[in-house]
Length: 423
Ligand code: LLP
Image 1 (cartoon, rainbow, N blue to C red):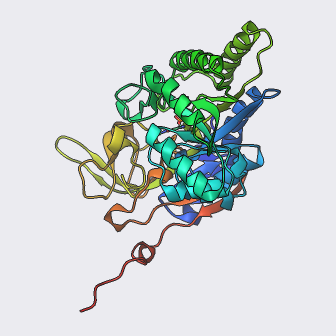
Image 2: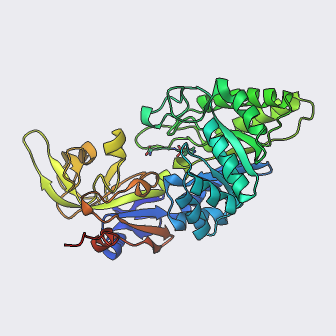
Image 3: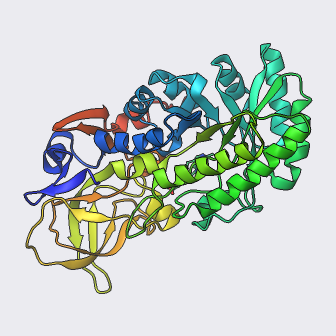
């Protein structure tokens, strides 16, 4: 159920009118619903009940401390991709012992930081990375827990920029090289081989490719066991999509039920084989529809070929349309009987690529409020300061209360780290 619904003609976030939020915090502002976030997370957590399973929220989707703290309090682990993300988890009170560290380019410093905080596991993506991690762990007098990210070469059938499980992608160890990579890892004294993982892409509507990847991983786990390399966890990554327009993604409980059914059948066929822990790394399906970007119309600019609705949010605040030609829903906050026209919704940034939505029927006038829907994932976390624009404020709504969880950036803060050369 959406937590951004109209009441008496005005869109609300839970029980709070978005008009009130705009008044109090200004625009553009990311507005999150606590209830939506928890509902989405709990649909994973509840489906894992009674299982040896861990939901590691992929925090790159939205790494605001308030989001992390809420999820950590409900038992989430985290999938991180940088030292900075680990420091955020710690600042939010999350448990590094429930953190998986993914990414193709981990630096020595990031490895040392993660080792010093005893994270759960490094998701290693190449043989050179295994060597580096072994060395960094030796220097630290530690043994690094590792999983190999295997590229199962399945087609996730999603946008090419967010497909990651094909041979042509930079991610993971090629499926055919995985056995050799595991043998190499098992021989390194400062590594402890714990698991296997994959992440085949994002915004997947169907779970068939994920289950195909699971089958491939299961086959590998068996082959490794034959060689005496026994794995303790299997991590399927993230990827479940959300509804932006009229997509109908697989329901999370259905997907998880199918995963566990396969795992159970596999284990049963081994006559009492040891149970394996299962991990997931969902991002978008937890935060995506738990957030909107609230923006105000600055000007309407009718044109010969197109009408432009110029708003105060721009590509720097929400990159997805410019970067992936992503379709995001746009709605008026206050329903009106203004005449409808077709507009391109664009921002103030000096690029033709600065658009948020194209050819939308809107009933708007200057100064009206709009929301961009489903902006909770890969919205603020991908925002930049292009054109020296401070990033939006972020507000978390809980019932009829709103909390400012990140202040709007002041322009002065954007150049505070800079200095000029002496004359
Ligand atoms: N695990 C790994 C290793 C990942 O690389 C990702 C996302 C996830 C988990 C979470 O995937 P999700 O459940 O959110 O699909 N900026 C793009 C999406 C990039 C996804 C990157 N990796 C967008 O706005 O569509």
